[in-house]
Length: 377
Image: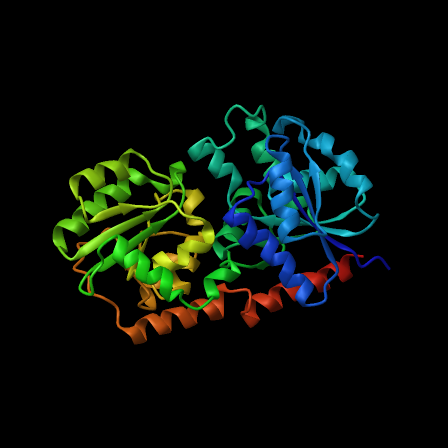
């Protein structure tokens, strides 16, 4: 019996998300004595630098150069066949890795579904100019219906599969996006003190923080609108953008000097900025892409004890946070107060129990995948 398990990624950005959702997951498997090997196909652009990053974090990972241009991704199957054993099980992150693994016809495939990919293309044109736009729906359909097992990041994503592709089975497990391990470390008091001094943060300030990228689904124009309302209504509020800058952030800084700050920092420094904050900002448009999503930033905010200013219909999370007093509806008129220490501890404990890789629930889900691997052989 071949008990080998692989995890496959294709053309993924090697950053903070990669570390928390790929590297840390592989390490979790290994701490549970599960024999798993990470296989990464990396773009030739900055291949050497990204290979070194991955090897530094996970020396035994197999890091391979991807065939140039996404539309030729199936040509990577020849290298994949060389580095995998026949009839082994492979967990595939996203539709392209899944279709690639299916094309070898020698592997048992688990589709790791990260979102509603057809909706991402239809709503945000994510795969424009790849030459694959017309195939996205078919690739997602085959990933959902032709895989041997599936991982979904939310229950809403499973509902989407049932509606969009008539998925009728129950051969799946729901595992939400979990925080990187460094979000569970104790506060760095030296860093916190330095941040407060640098930005003149005083005890009466209520700090809101936004952590994220500049993708279209971040809806910065809407975020800007609601932040203006909050700042006008709450004179002791200040806002940190822990992200790359853009015109919306620059406009807010110009309008609210000394109340809106921007800082782009390495992932491991983010927790210290959240530790001085009371609220995290999470806004999404009311679209399918966002209705099925599991934004890791939600888990990150909660892991540092923040309440979340959240919009409606974000994955499984909007109703969860509002009903458990861990969030507020960002679209309402808000008079904000600082959460108490006990509130922050309660929120942090909830995050550890539900969105950390040390959570028994999360660990049991990954152990289930190992059992599924054995059943598929």
